[in-house]
Length: 57
Image (tube, rainbow, N blue to C red; front, side, top):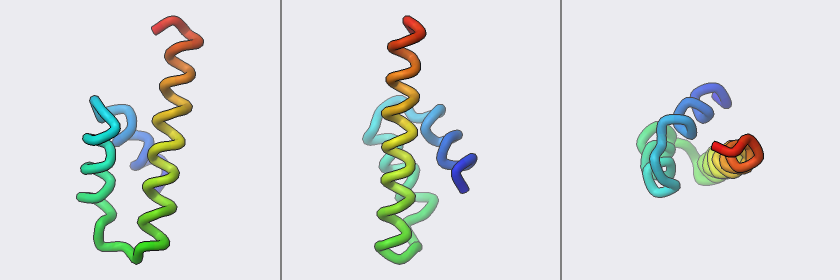
């Protein structure tokens, strides 16, 4: 599941697009599970952004 979320993070051009993609893919989950998926996605996006800044991208 995390691999799929990472792909979504890499392909999203904004946090809003990431949110929409996560909801489209996992919106049928129970709210607790969906919350965990959303948290993973946003954490991965934040870490990817920090990595890009550190690398000068």
